[in-house]
Image 1 (spheres, rainbow, N blue to C red):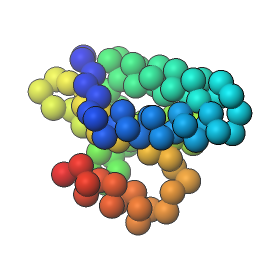
Image 2 (cartoon, rainbow, N blue to C red):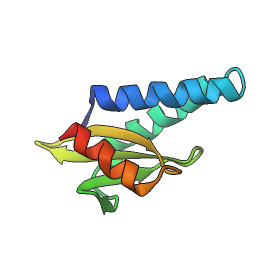
Image 3 (cartoon, one colour):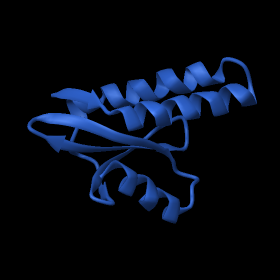
Length: 99
């Protein structure tokens, strides 16, 4: 299965990278690499995750983030990569921005 990452997800990853780099130098790069590894795993495991807000949700192992994606025409399309510590109302708003 192929994986496509939308601009909204790339922007989410950049925000997370900046946040973790602000905490300590180099952690942002580790965050970015870890989340991309999780996203890459969708080539094998796309579609096995629970559905939330109409999207499949892959929970990251090392950071409190979730990858929200849909399966369309045999592709896993990543829409958002969001911090799980956010208020659920803000999460719903983030998905409305994508639609």
